[in-house]
Image (cartoon, rainbow, N blue to C red; front, side):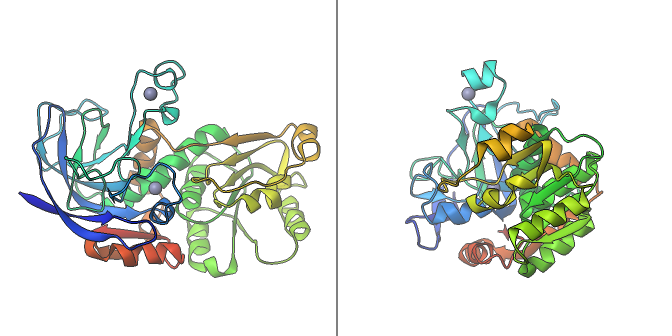
Length: 364
Ligand SMILES: [Zn+2]
Ligand SMILES: [Zn+2]
């Protein structure tokens, strides 16, 4: 038996449809028919060859959800529920080694140096080939963490939640937002929107979303999710914008700034928007992106400001994101602005690249 997948063979070139043999499952492995794969901003960087982890050729896609078609042996989800053929499932996009210092001792598996990520760090040249979500099916290795979904769950929304939603959950853990804290979010993409929802759900006070005028649709959705103020980063001077933030936060600045912009210049502009004893959290930097200057005395030391990186996520974060979506409290369905067939992956990447989409989903 053969199945189709969308393969990146050369950086900077559109991916192409290819067929591979479907190989037998080893013990503990699960085959899932992909119901929806989402196109991540990282996939745009990966396609351009900007992610140092990427081998070629590769089946792109680390965001996906679908139905179990086959299993070898007993495989359970995080709640101990046995997976069965036909079950709707989602899975952790990274496989951790569980034995290294970061996994076993520090309990920070996102930092596992042996972490392998479907669609990012595992190529498709050798069997079992199907190691990314831009495909009809995926061959999930033993050790993959699963969450059974409910019938009726939206596969596209959950696929999106499996990456940016989970990273937003990790961001919340690092941000340690207290009830009533003002939270400023830079960048109204999927990561920023999930952060806004988590901040709202965590009891944040005023939520400020930073975006550009042309982000209209994203900013409207941010407001629907719970952002109180919109700060246009393409209007006025930096000083004007900092003054606006202070005017919305009792003259203090934001207790917490979540930088989801993914560009170094955002930090240069907004580090000083943090209130004394506040934090500046960086979940948005996914590939090496250059340098920027910081004034350590004025912006950090003198104000007791905490500067905190956030790298990807682990299974607990995925579960938080799935549960936030399943709560039905937020209109995440509106985030999926574009749907394409699997063979139109190049077009899906393009609408993510030119930012006309908030999120594009691929369905086989
Ligand atoms: Zn992603
Ligand atoms: Zn490890």
